[in-house]
Image (tube, rainbow, N blue to C red; front, side, top):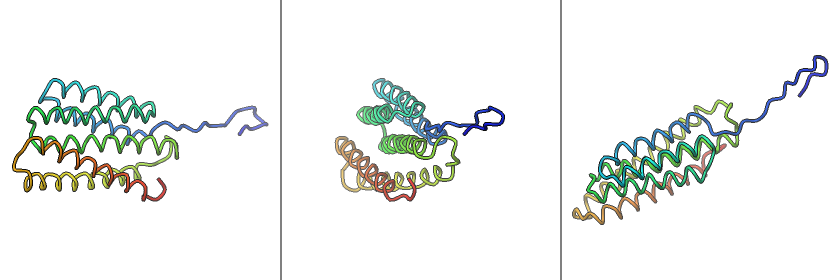
Length: 183
């Protein structure tokens, strides 16, 4: 809108950039995966660093493909650490944090596109974050218990169990996102 009397232009453009809080959280989850899995193997470290960098680029630029590729890199970095005998708890943490990086990054992009970067979305973002962490924690605990009870300590079964746990976590988060009001 412009005011014809003084000639000033008071129009504001809609900023559809990803929200800062969820973008920061996605990047933080990427760094956590790198810190947890990176020390176990050079390949794991390289994959995690590249993945965390792509997550950051994805949430800064609003690139879903950059975010997704980055999170896949984080996940493969966690799996590479597992191949080099990283403890099960580290694997579960890293896989869960990889999925949380993807979920919070998608939330940042979605909210930026739908409500704009300037909207006050902190409460919504934190509610979504805590729900996602709860789903991730329950999934990781169930995965850990299933591995302890049913695998007999076989390393290949740990990797397969973690993959199943990651898929269940992703399915739970997608279900949560599709039933959340207003998102």
